[in-house]
Image (tube, rainbow, N blue to C red; front, side):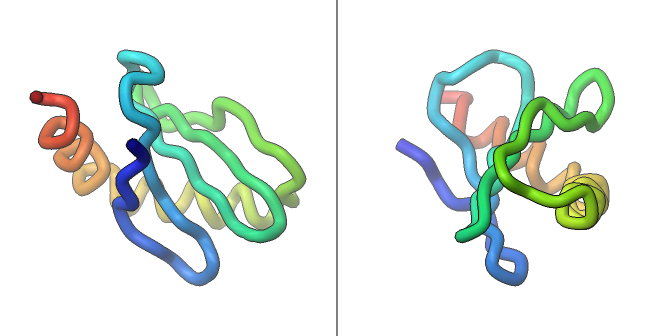
Length: 79
C-alpha cells in the first residue's frame, strides 16, 4: 500500500508501507523519482533522473512540510 500524502505541481509524495523504519518520503513525477529521509536530518536518500534544480525544490517542500509528513507517518504506521 502506498498512500499519497499530497501532490505538489506534478509531484506525488507518498510512503511505501513497511519499507524501512527510518521516517522518509518518496516522490515521483513523470520525469523520475526521489526519496528523502527526515531523520536524523532531512537528506536525499536517492534519486532517479531528476535535475539538481528539481531536487533542491523538492527538498524545500519536504523541509516546509516535514511536520505534516511526520504526523502522517505516525498515523499510517501506528497500526
